[in-house]
Length: 277
Ligand code: NI
Image (cartoon, rainbow, N blue to C red; front, top):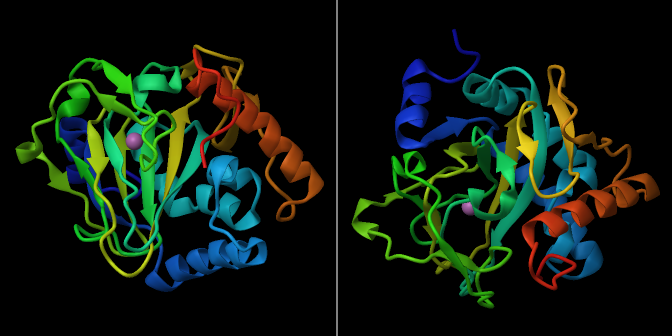
């Protein structure tokens, strides 16, 4: 029995390392989430940047509601079981007609998480199309070993280190993960994926919600995560508090602590002390 996904979708995830589309929000609700993000951006006069693109569910009650959304968690439970932590969230925003891209990579490269049953729910708040730089994936690549990556720190690369797979990726095998607003894709931590720039006149906004079963460990630092469903019998992660109000003192403090740990893990071996803008 599954909670939300069709058995066929679960099979596809096991075989391909990815399944989509999964409808989790109405188009109207997706537009409301976008509006909440853009309300905040208007208040600061700038797009969400740097550390604030990450673990955003610790800062804003609307993002916290999204990581607790029952449909999203039902689908995640179908893949990783009932005891679930949200490890992080990352906004992937591609501004209109902008060179920002994502190089070919495996998420597992710098995360420090073991074992590898880690799933990303990538929720589209706008359409994700070929033209605006939707994610591209190599189905089945989650079954190969960790590939060597090189850090480029390329300016327009949206990844933390601009990391990319050292070898040539065979793009002829790539599948375009096109989504309507309110749909999501689910992908495995070792799936090879990347994306091209947005060539359209509107922003492309997606938010990646990273979920782990409670038995997963962080090998690099003492890390934190937010319990979102079930029971944590392992205690591998310090529990993160849910925000009671957007950007209140407690939320800002919790976010600073959690992002500090994540930066230490992801940028280990470099001089970096914060996420790139
Ligand atoms: Ni990725």
